[in-house]
Amino acid sequence: MIAPRKIEPDTEKRELRVLWTDGHRSAIPFKALRDHCPCARCRTARESGRAPLQMVLTTKLLGWKRVGNYALHFAWGDSHSEGIFAFDFLRGLCPCGTCTPFRDDI
Image 1 (cartoon, rainbow, N blue to C red):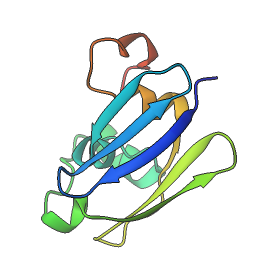
Image 2: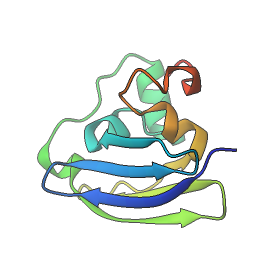
Image 3: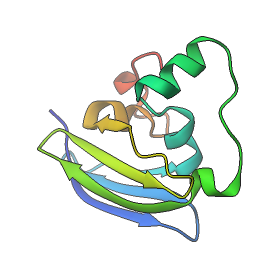
């Protein structure tokens, strides 16, 4: 399993910087994290065709923490904090072309 070695939110650039154990570096926009939140409520909204909520607080990262050895949890400015991002799912959100094999039809 690929896991983060170092995680640094950049609130100025509004992106999550991740150094992975395989040496790859990702800069994942906060908007991508929110647009692909894996919680049941967000997933149901996406599957029913509803557009994600768009406002400044939606992508204001208030905090984050590791969940065991497999995921990250984020708290957002609009009080949303249900999503648990498994490391492989998070890696799939990396916008570079190298991480395409890690994507699982996001």
